[in-house]
Length: 608
Ligand code: F6R
Image (cartoon, rainbow, N blue to C red):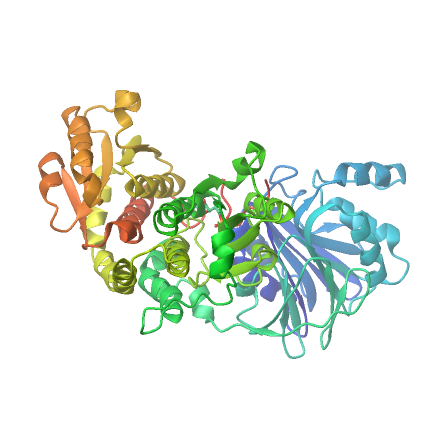
């Protein structure tokens, strides 16, 4: 968690750092701070609260200088407070450090440093780094940082400055993302590309164990032990606008509305006119697939919900058993993994700690690994054997929307490609599904036109205390995603239930007027779901049904119906989730919630 940024050049560093941090707030936003070097002084400003608090302070009392580091925090060690905010400095105030990650052995290091007379001000793990740099510093900052990282266990992206070396900032990474922005007469460090995109499109993506010495006119790349490293420049080909709100009130609604394009971008480059799928560099051959006797799909939160569709499709079409499980549980369930297993990890950020840990476990046991991720250069993308990128563009709102639909599309392509290679799918069925996929962006556009009517619906339920979502089969998977979306942005308590399971207990919670959102998009389960809808309707629930155009039977037992365009059952989640996302958005805004940054959440969850 947390976002770091650094600048060295000729401009006012504080402006660039604050601007950069505003693009990283999705990584955490319970405090923010900067440290600026100028005239042999290190000026540290850091405050609990949103970036706006820091900005207000800087507006009143500017911090002038052309070199600096900044941080936006999501607390792990120590509550959000001014003193626990980053940057952290050594006792003499010469050295400042920003950190993203967790130093796992910080207690041991802290005890050693205290024995040597170092005084700690904060409860953070990061403060040890500032004191360690101080301890090892003998005139060469690079050497000092090299020595420090040898002592550190855990995950870190670090930015370090020292007033005795005002011509450089040092950046080093292990298990936390870090990029270097290459400017002209100025250079940058950051946790993520949007932080520097206003200034440069040329980026070095840092790998684990690498360090950069960043000067105004020079960037020296090396391993943290000093061995030189050569790297290609990655040129960002998406627009800075793509990372900004572009006229929408919130990132969440902007990203919901971007779904037709995101799906198209994910789909089109992978399909040729003959309906053949080109899966980038995925090297799984027919022979490889035939050896695989167990597929695992591991992810967290929304990405896990996408994984559930992957499970259904692979199991149905590829003729191989699939287990889909959440990352935080998977490792502790003694999974049986061997070299005949394939693990697919799904992660928007590519940094989620539990998903990454599952991937590493699978690799250790000799399994083949495939990542579905949205972030180029992310840890998961680099560690998996094969990567399939969801070309959703940067997702800024904490609540995932376009990443989810592109994950669904990606998993559908992967399943169909595997089935085609293994010849476990009929040609006609394969072609039908590909043709249906091609129509999805257009159908998504139609769903987005329902925004006004969904907003009216939101008005009817936004005061509710509890809202239930029900569905069968893959409708249940989408119900889980709809429910998560609603609760995380609106703070209304919500649960998703398998429609047939409701009467085994949870139905006791249904009172007169309790909203129940019922998904009934599966032709083969339609009659059964309609019966379940009738059960809750008879007990006074306010039923909002979601069905395919033409399936009018549900209207008889529903107070409201949302119709989505007709679509083949297997792909219906890519459409049916969208009205639920829009509903969650409107309910949250009607309740005055901060939709893009819901309380207690962060976009990138790099702790277990
Ligand atoms: C919910 C949401 C989270 C993420 C989860 C995994 O809207 O965004 O549930 O899906 O934290 O994150 P990634 O996909 O980055 O691994």
